[in-house]
Amino acid sequence: MYSNSIRYLVPIIACAAMPVGLALGQDATAQTPVTQKNPVKEYVGSRKCGRCHEQHYHGWKSTLHTKMEQRVIATGYNQTVLGDFSSKDPDLTFTLDEVDMLVGSRFKQRYAKKIGDDYYMLPAQWNVETDEWVPYNPKKDWWAAEKGLYPKEWYKRPNSKLCEGCHTTGFDIQTKKPVEQNIACEACHGPGRLHAKTEEKADIVNPARLSHERGNMICFQCHMRGRPPKGEFETYAWAVGYKPGDDLRKYWAYSKPSGKNQYGLWADGYARKNRVQGNTFIQSKMYHKGVKCYTCHDPHGTRHTAFTVKSADTNSICLSCHGENSQSAVFKNDLSEHTHHKATGSGSKCIECHMPKTGKNAVKWDSRDHSFTFISPLSTIRFGTPNGCNNCHTDKTPEWALKKVTDWTFLK
Ligand code: HEC
Ligand code: HEC
Ligand code: HEC
Ligand code: HEC
Ligand code: HEC
Ligand code: HEC
Ligand code: HEC
Ligand code: HEC
Image (cartoon, rainbow, N blue to C red; front, side, top):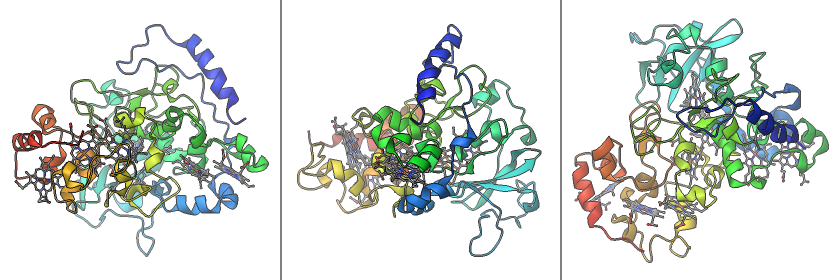
């Protein structure tokens, strides 16, 4: 079996080694993992998987999971550099010659320089939507900065500790090398050398066969903000040692809403930054009813934005479960009964009211909330959380929107 040893050994030893009164101020269920079990030999890499799973391979290749870390290609049809390096912008303090690796491409692009055996992020980022350079510096309200773990200087902040576990597959903290750059098959299916030999389904993790909690944790390992538990890996910003199928909470303490605006979450628990899909989704009824990240997203690629299984633009992704004849129907005859907007207009798009852009990835606001509840204009009045109504009705106040929406009636 793929991970027997890890699954059954870690909890026992970890409990014994756990300091009494572990106080993280977050999720106290996190325990100390014993050691990074990272036998690189167990991995084979996505090309090998692709030989037998051709369709999955090609579909996956079309997703942004394969483009997180890219080589520098400055010109030509397969150009990867997005930033304008001819710019005289004072925020741009380095040249393209210094860049050894690109990180990101959809919302923003950051630039890494190799020094010794590690990469370090250069201090400016390119914002894609607004076509501009902005400074990229460590934030004061981030836990590692708060504890003074890392100096402010960019060349003292190694990617191996701060980034690589979430941007690569099978990252080895000793050699500081991944098995493969980017988020590949084995990041979600676990190491697959044995399976590639035996072709047995028992030798590979299929998330569909895990409980919805364990299945979702595969995505949470990267899409859930938090911090490491105290112990050997407490200076890493990612879940060292976790493998698909494991209980992530042993490796990672989830950030939770605290009633105050914090770095990743608004006081009321909505997304204030990117990559809090896990933190927000676990608050929703849908999570508790067994819906998974991959109920809506197919990591092996689709033709829709963010590889959603159906279009969000036409509402079909939501209507497959909330359509007029379904158990969780939100209208009887016409969608406008629920949305109070023209059924065919933008004001009737589920995601604009139920997953509004409330978080900052590159700019305010470009990152969608994943708690799926309707974010009331009251949240804006209380905490400043953006709400869907005023994201569109920018010329109106939250008080106006609150009044309108409380006048509406809904199907019960
Ligand atoms: C030599 C061919 C071969 C290679 C290489 C291979 N697989 Fe498979 N894989 C199979 C076959 C055959 C099955 C169907 C097994 C069955 O149904 O009993 C399968 C099934 C699976 C399943 C479904 C398991 C289930 O529970 O239904 C997953 C997931 C999977 N493979 C992932 C991978 C990954 C990831 C890799 C690379 C690490 C990989 N495979 C490499 C042949 C291969
Ligand atoms: C705990 C996991 C994790 C860590 C640690 C992490 N990231 Fe990410 N990063 C993600 C995930 C997941 C996304 C995509 C989430 C989203 O869009 O909301 C992302 C998105 C990004 C993007 C935007 C990509 C795009 O296409 O616009 C950049 C740039 C980025 N990360 C850089 C970094 C850098 C630099 C570090 C280290 C200093 C880092 N990240 C550390 C998980 C992580
Ligand atoms: C980001 C995570 C992720 C990545 C990367 C990924 N998979 Fe999957 N894979 C999943 C999930 C989740 C499922 C279960 C989907 C479901 O509910 O049916 C799955 C299911 C499968 C299955 C079972 C058959 C099926 O479609 O349900 C195969 C085979 C498979 N993946 C192969 C691959 C191969 C090969 C790669 C790399 C080329 C790959 N996967 C990359 C998450 C991933
Ligand atoms: C090893 C870390 C890792 C894992 C595991 C992972 N992701 Fe991601 N995910 C990322 C990063 C990093 C990005 C940003 C990629 C980029 O912008 O190039 C991302 C981006 C995405 C995106 C946005 C793609 C787009 O087109 O904008 C979706 C959707 C997504 N992930 C869903 C999932 C789901 C669902 C799972 C679990 C089945 C999962 N991810 C597992 C790291 C991960
Ligand atoms: C009920 C469906 C649903 C579920 C469950 C879901 N998502 Fe999404 N997700 C969406 C839709 C819809 C979009 C927006 C697609 C678009 O822009 O067209 C999206 C967008 C994203 C993006 C792109 C970034 C952004 O802010 O738009 C990422 C990353 C992502 N989801 C990751 C996840 C992860 C990880 C999980 C599990 C924690 C998850 N999603 C669960 C429907 C879902
Ligand atoms: C796979 C089926 C499925 C899909 C797809 C789905 N939902 Fe749901 N949704 C459910 C179920 C089941 C519930 C719980 C119903 C209940 O218990 O009353 C639910 C509940 C909800 C709730 C009430 C949640 C709460 O916490 O109060 C909202 C809002 C919602 N869904 C919005 C959406 C939106 C928006 C989409 C599309 C992005 C979507 N759903 C896609 C199945 C789904
Ligand atoms: C213009 C904004 C708006 C749009 C668009 C919208 N909703 Fe809603 N939705 C709301 C509001 C407001 C509530 C809260 C109702 C309440 O609290 O009783 C709600 C409640 C819900 C609920 C929870 C019902 C309950 O009380 O159990 C579900 C499920 C839901 N919406 C699904 C959807 C789906 C699916 C779509 C797209 C087809 C959609 N909504 C489009 C504003 C909207
Ligand atoms: C995605 C954009 C969008 C969202 C989200 C949205 N609206 Fe609208 N709204 C529109 C558009 C476009 C119209 C024009 C008429 C139509 O499409 O029904 C409109 C019309 C209206 C009207 C009637 C005209 C007026 O200005 O007096 C009211 C009232 C209204 N919206 C209130 C709300 C409230 C309250 C919410 C949140 C629950 C909301 N809207 C969310 C786009 C949006």
